[in-house]
Image (cartoon, rainbow, N blue to C red):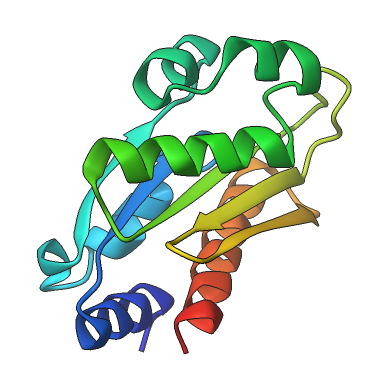
Length: 154
């Protein structure tokens, strides 16, 4: 069973829904879920907020936050997840932000990323420093996000 299948199955068992806010993963996290038959019962939608403008306008991340802590931070990841949860009215939301590489961005080294998971009584952020090229970092972020979420659901 793939991680996407596991997450969809767990959400179905619990009668809960999920939305996604992606920056670093560029839609790959949503794809991992929508590749699963029946995901439409639990996956409400996602936002690929790759630009700062999208984070501000589509997810209501406060500009002051981005100005003070940057786009690559636990605070921004949490704000992105909160924005997706509000926008879609889901029980859960996952957000990803970070630097896929190959070089650093705004002083943050390639491979550094933040995954936020929010629910009614859960506010969790993981900071990871992954090795590899751009596609390896992105696929590692997707696997890490789905694994972390599955652990919360079980």
